[in-house]
Length: 172
Image (cartoon, rainbow, N blue to C red; front, side, top):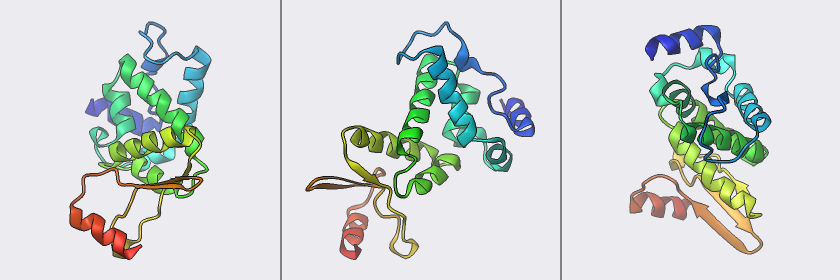
């Protein structure tokens, strides 16, 4: 896989072996071939050749690269399609750039993916979504804030110690 990664890094195109376009999949999520193509076209725009050439980690450290290089199954295909759809729905959300930076990085992409999945569930139910911009002097803080009418919820998507949560709540 390291050779494959070096090859795609040099070409700047992680989609050189589009296993996800095969039509012999047991469908986990029903999508037409055009919808599958559109989802991966969108992912290629977001995770472009500039990003790929600049990426400094191992492919296993990034959700997209790990899925593309070590994938090849219906569940990873479905996951990447859903990721593309979530990104399109949430791209105008305040603070979206924060979660995108993590999604494109190394080591944080799985957590960012979980944040996007959770935010999208609430978004599709009509909630307003905000990805708070972290204040470096106050620690990481919450990952998502949602609201709908008088309902408000603050969400942390990582394991936390009670002291961290209490400190964050006191400083907001």
